[in-house]
Structure formats: structure tokens, C-alpha cells
Image (cartoon, rainbow, N blue to C red; front, side):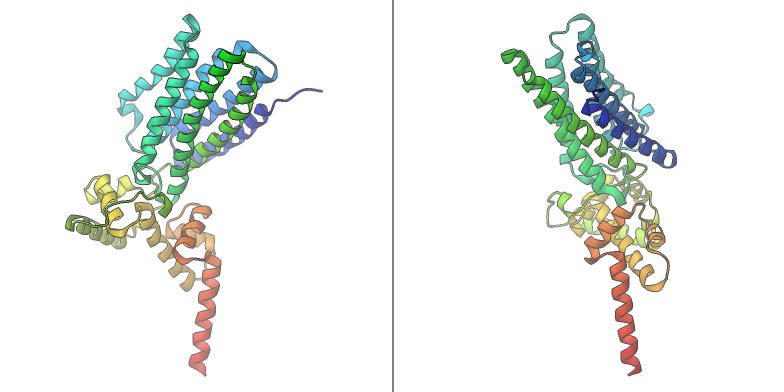
Length: 352
């Protein structure tokens, strides 16, 4: 009977995620690094299956190179959610090809330092991703505001996983030094299968939230000074007027960077003012407008909930339901039924 290693199953699941992401990107034009990241995840899973399932030790150098590429693409993917500037206009990012080139050099000419190089590379990118996550959800200014939680959660998961990979590589190196690699196969099989599948799903979620801007929920909002300055109040009031007068919340691709440009201010100024004056993230703030609009449409029209979701500015049902529950404490259907019942009750009282 043909033996099919578990990493092959993971690779198949990752390929399904890849196809879904590519189809979605045909419409949204999302960050291509997320697509490349999922593709490399799938390829790495196949390599791991061949290496540890069929003992093809010749694939070890390929596994090391792909691991380096994964760490680099993970950083570039989330860096792309921070700024809308095209990568072609940021040549400094070409420096991120150096880690893979260095590992390839070690593979070709001096293999012993490969394990140490991988540990350093993963630690470096893991720390960089952690710092980006520490800056808060509004740091991802180029992601859609209605899907902020997905991107931010994916960033946190990826940062943790990349740092975890550095730890696993360190443990494997120690295992080879002490026991000759007795436990390494089990560590690699379990660790990589879980990590690749989780990271692939995280990349898919974050990639789906690209194309404009994202934010976060209360639990993701970092603590900010309670006292807002007069300047903060002025900025927040100006944002209120702009969003309401132009109904900007209906734009499903609205993000923090675009909002700041319309204000003629920096994203940091807008984000800071909203954080301090409204005590919420920019995504929550804009989604509050969207939920209020959805409530109006639910009360005044007979349109289906899905149509109302899009008209109010949401793009996905999961984000709509989550934000609607956060603001109203119930689902859209339950809110509509309750409103209809209350309206019917008022009519009966008037008649009586």
C-alpha cells in the first residue's frame, strides 16, 4: 500500500487555499506576496513529506532554502499591508533577497553554518513581525477597514509561528548535537505540519483583507492616553464631518491611508486622534457608521440582509455579523425581527 505522508495532505489543503486566494485576487488585486507565500508553504510541505516520509536526505538543502524564503515572504506580505506604495518604488526591499542568497551560498560552499543561519533569520523576521504587531492594528493602514481583525490576527499568528520556528530549529540542532537526531524527525513532522497549515490559513485570511484597509476590535486596541488634546478633538470632528457628508463608510475599499489622504493629514494623526477621542480603532469607528446604516436599511427596507451588508460598506458576511453583534448585541436578522415586533406593538397601541 502506498504510504502518503501527512505533509502531502497539508500541501493539498494549502493548494486549495492558494486557488481560493488567486480567484479572490483576480477581483481585488491583492498583495502578490501572500499568494507567493501560500505557494511556498505548499511546496515546503511536499518537500518535508518527501524528506521525512521517504528519507530523501538530498532534499535537506532545498528545505533550508524554502524555509528562508518563507520567513522573507511573511515579512514582505505584512509590510505590504502597511503601505500602499508599490514595491517597485521601494528598491530597498530588494535587500530581503540576501537571506535566501546567503543560505544558498552556505548550501553550495559551506554547509555547517546553515542551521545557525536559519535560526538567526527566523529570529530576525520574527522580531520584525512582532514589532509590527506591537504597533497596533492601525499600523496596517493599507488593509480594508471592515476586515481588520483578520489581518491583525494573521500578523500575530505569523509572528508567533516564525519565532516558534526559530526555537524548533534550535531544539533540532541541539538534538543532533546530543543524540544524533533521535527526536528530530518527530519534531519536524509535527511542528511543520501544524505550522504550515496554520500559516497558510493566516496568509489566506490576511490576503483576503488586502486591497484597502483594516483595523481591529476592542481587544486589539492598544491602550492610549485617556486625555485627548484640542487638536485631536478637531481632527476627530473633521473626520466625522467628512465621513458623514460623503458617506465614505459605504466604500468597501476604504482604508486608513485613503482616509488620511482625504483629510490632508498623516495616517498616524488620524489614527491617534480617533484612538484618543473615540477610544477605539479606526476600523471600529468606521464600522460603527456602517452598522448604523445597516440598521437604518433593515428598519426601512425589505432588502435581504446580504444586499444591505454590501450597501452599508461591508464586504464579507463574517465581518458584517461580527461588527453588527459588537455594536447591537444581536445578529442582523434578530435586530430586524425585534424592530418589526416593536413597530407592530406601537401600531397596536395607537389603534387601541
